[in-house]
Structures are given as structure tokens and as C-alpha cells.
Length: 286
Image (cartoon, rainbow, N blue to C red; front, top):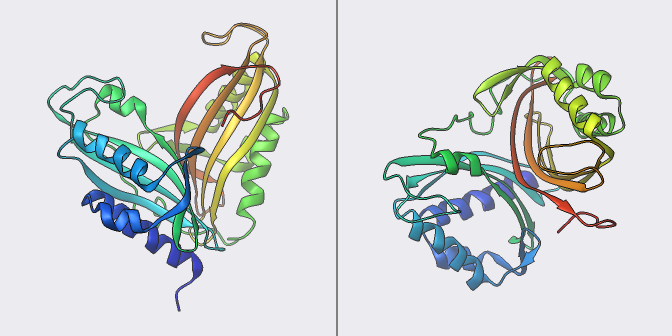
């Protein structure tokens, strides 16, 4: 008998396959009447029209499912899609180069009554901007192919403890405990945990009152993966990028964490969907 997690992943695969085939009837039938995409209410017709715009800009668009996993209660699926094609008209502010390229999307789908109820999605804009020829793949349904650690429970707590430790100033201890000595970042290069520590210390030096609010969290203990979408908010205390002291900055990030056989973070895929200054008193800018 299949589990609830298997069932909802199957629904997600059907949706992805229908999108690749431009099977709008199948997609429409599987959208919930109260659908939202990135916190904006959409009718089925509006959702389909948005999808069609992508095919107009990239007529030979191909969609491949690289990762898909669900939580045990069978409501949420986290997926990584690889999109390939040749840009024929301006898309997301990028002009066509005439050569095929790839970009990825990290996405969370929430299902209700067997239909897509909520979609959170982030597009890898840097790959589009640079029109990257080829992106790294990960073995489907097996993370990065690591053997599983002896303890395969408590992953949610381990992940949230890391985030809490980083935001509350306990950066070094939290990273040393959670991360392997070398972490594969976006399938391209290894970063040391010392680099991760320094990156977070630099942020803490420039921003105070750091706060994280999860928008979506999917934990797959069977294969030791965590997919998340979350807001990071902080007040600028010294010059930081293009922001001025006193401003409140908010990032919206998506990430997949892959835990290795030693029970530590071995690989990380991450996309920053947005970053902007927000008004005083504004919470997560939905």
C-alpha cells in the first residue's frame, strides 16, 4: 500500500508531466478552486495563461523533474525542476542569445482534496541572466546518493536548531554541529564550513534583530532531505550591499538540504527569490 507521501508525490509528477506536454486540460482539472501562487490568488485560467507565457518566450521549453519529496502527512511536496530551451523573446528581463540554456525552479506544492491548493516557487534568475548551458542534476529520489545516517529521525528539529542558532548569534557552534567539513553548494563547488561561518558572521555584523519566518517546510526523513522557503529579516546597522543603516532588509529564500551518512549537511541547493527593503513594522512581505 502506498503512503500518503508517495501519493502526493505522484500527483506532483502528473502535474509536472502535464506541464511539459502543455496538457492544460489535465492541469486545470487538478487545480483547487482556492489556488494561490506565491501568495496571490489565481483562477485556473490565470494559472494556465501564466504558464503559456513561458512557452511563448521559450517555444522549445522542456521540463524535467530532478527532485521530488513529500512530508509524511502527505500534504506538501518539495520539487526541483530543470527547465531547458532556447529563448526567442525577452523573458524576465533577459534578452535572447539564440542558444539553448537551462535554469531551475525550486517549488513547494500544497495539496488539498487531491488538488493543488498552494504553490510557492522560486526561479533561478542568475542562470537565466547568464543563460547557463547546463545545470547539475541530482539522483532522483535519493538526494545526492549518500548512505543514510544511523539516526533518520529528528531531522526537522536539527534543521530548525541550525536556523535558530544562526539568527540568535550562536553561528560557529551551530554550523560546526550541523555542517560537514565541505558542503557541495548548488552542485557546482564545495564550500567549507569555515566559509559558511564567515558568511553568516558578516551578515550578523551588518544586520541586527535577525528573524526567520518559514513559509513552507518539507522534511523527508527517509532520504534525509529538507526543503524550505523562508523569509529572513534584519535591520541594517552599517553599509550592507546597496542598503543604508536603519533600513530593514528582507530576503525570501528557497533551499534544499541533503544530509550525508555522517548525519551532517553534505549538499545544499539554494535560490534567493527576492531581496528588498521593507517598511518599519512590516512582517513577511507576502
